[in-house]
Length: 549
Image 1 (cartoon, helix red, strand yellow):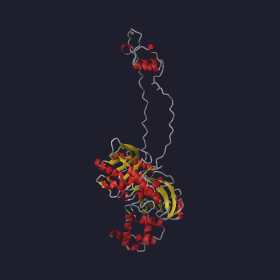
Image 2 (tube, helix red, strand yellow; image 1 turned 180 degrees about the vertical axis):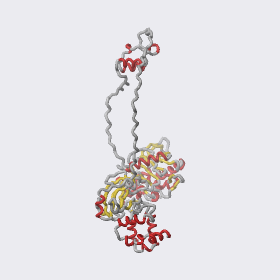
Image 3 (cartoon, rainbow, N blue to C red; image 1 turned 45 degrees about the vertical axis):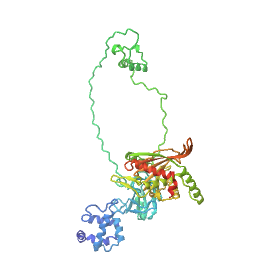
């Protein structure tokens, strides 16, 4: 209070704030910067555009200053807010989108400056999911020069998990699109567009380009490499080559020529007759040095023989480079992290599914009569897995550095393969839902995944995952990779008929069995706990009527 009173009493310009507010905003910025910087803004120049994150502190100081001093009595709350934005205080906010329940948008205010840019807003790449660090612009739904209103969709952003719509926060005009359609690997917070409040200001941003500090990490300056020191030629002393003299040896008594294997190979490759060479090795053996001397004397270059190949020139490989999609990058990163950091172990069991198939046939007859959708084996597997997690809650948990988090809700992720990559939409509270509800929800989410239109709430918050390669692909058995931060995933194989012993001696019958494998995080699920969960799951599959109780 004492500091604010000191400013009011000693600054004539501050006492005239109500009158100056009616002047041009750019003049106000220059006046305030020149006259009040020494006493009010010693820490930072108010003419700078500050990044998102300073909003609360600046507003609290301005609000307290206005509330406690009569000099501000001529300012309305709206005028003060607008003036604050014009002075360069960033206005970041929360956008409520039909694609996202709540997202944080990176934006900041510019101001009239010597560079000739009028007041404007820089829109940054938003963070649309907890794991998003960069995104792609799928397409712009607004063009440069269009008027935009709050709630209107500006563009579609391809995140690490889906394609979502980005909405406008404030009314204005889209002056410049910095990142056009198809722009890839845009860091969160990097400028993608510029909006202005006045239509006449758009032309001034025709050649606008963000500075290095705004558009991402500045390019690292390569240190200048000093030129190599000049080396003066040094005369080498001329030495006469040493001549190799061979000691006269008595020739062998027989006509046989003795040579080392390497010497014989070199002589054969260079078509040198061994009989014309005098050996200098032990007992007159011909060695490698003798062959080299002979070739040198004939003026031939001694070189390694060319390997004999069927084709002298191998045909060039024909290939196509397919660029990584955003979902492919994230899937690769998360699965690599899972295999490197989670101690996996696997439990496999065979389950008889005859009674399950009979129950499914009865339920589908009822569904067809009522006009409902058919129930698949995977729907029954999801229901059985959810009930088993309710019975053995230790498997419905995740590992942290300080504790094991056990979830009260049973949310099952279902692996869905699409042309764009692997998606895992979630069925929330699967243990409390009926089979018809699970079936309808799975089909709807699978269709949205194939259309690349999943929302974050459609795939976030899962506690356990089911992956089925049996029904659609006929895979008998496989081991799945845990989807972090979960601690378990169930891999479901196909059902096949087997011959099993009958009730009497020498009697046999046929039955259908399905192999399932549970992948467990050993930090959370001990072997006995995993076996207990599989026992409960097997009980629900082999006695499916118990799932209806």
